[in-house]
Image 1 (cartoon, helix red, strand yellow):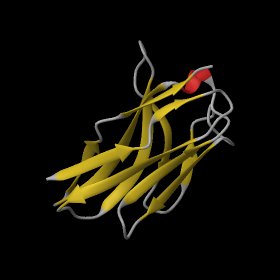
Image 2 (cartoon, helix red, strand yellow):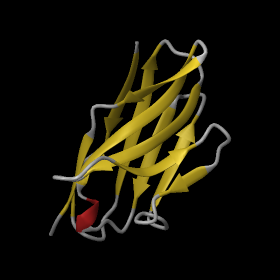
Image 3 (cartoon, helix red, strand yellow):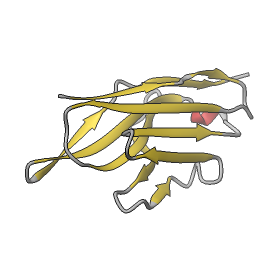
Length: 119
């Protein structure tokens, strides 16, 4: 059983910074992709950024230049450094991973962590 556990959410003023972490635990094969998604109130879940198995990292336009994703493959962890936070960044942030299981890729989600940006 695979678990993705996020930590590091909280409240911050506009212009502030937060760092989120995600750790994968359990027994599993190769993690293909890992990424961060977020869901604001009343909206669907949207991609923040993703690290592909190749090491390539892509970001949503709304966070480019402000957010940085880092992946530690040996530790099976993923982090999201957020800077210059804006009220529109307020959302529940979810860690996501695609993991090889046999001949297929299975998607896993963390439980989510709340980020609130408000003055």
